[in-house]
Image 1 (spheres, rainbow, N blue to C red):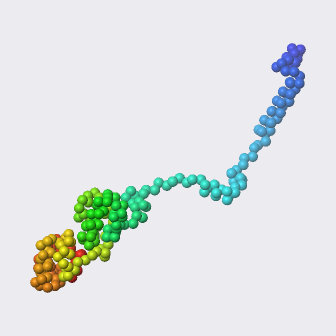
Image 2 (cartoon, rainbow, N blue to C red; image 1 turned 90 degrees about the vertical axis):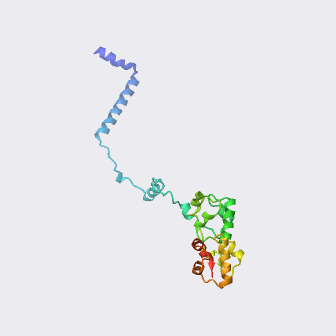
Image 3 (tube, rainbow, N blue to C red; image 1 turned 120 degrees about the vertical axis):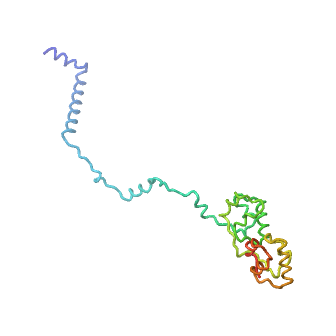
Amino acid sequence: MSALKKIAGNWLGFTRRERRSTFILLVIIVCVLSIRYIVPSRKIKIEEIPVDISCASFLQDTVPKPARNRAIPYKVSRQAASRPLTDLNLSDSSALVALPGIGPVLSVRIIKYRNLLGGFVSVEQLKEVYGLPAETYDLICKRVFADSLSIRKINVNDAKYKDLARHPYFKKNEVEAILKYRQLSGRINGLEDMMKNHLISEETCRKIKAYLEF
């Protein structure tokens, strides 16, 4: 017993006050642990937590939504759809230069050929413009149109030699045949009359018919 008392007196080399403080601290720890395991903790359900609906809706709006994978057709874009078409018969040089593949030289040639024709009847007539590549035509053919109501027509019965000869679809011999027929037979009544009397060829008739009036 004396040995145990001696060991207890020299417990871990602490003084009497330190041993008392340590014992009290151990008692407190044991009590806290006992209460934690004896008294069951109350679990709080999510439903019991009050939520401010207005705040929740605000947070929902601020959270970025994942972007949808929308398939946009390659050939049709919003910019292309909203781009206005260019009227070949009313466009000036600056409007034509704005088209892809058309520079100042080609724009002047298009306008010059338009004046010779009296206006474009169809977009395909651009293929007849000197020096206009097929690749350029493919680029611009769907971005232009030709208003045939604005073309300038030729009155076959009143036109002079120079008025007929300057048109690129009339051949020289055809112009001479028309003037000679008018001189000998009088008025030409229509395209059928011209074809019947061999004044123009079938090819010329097909190309020139939109530019003639009688």
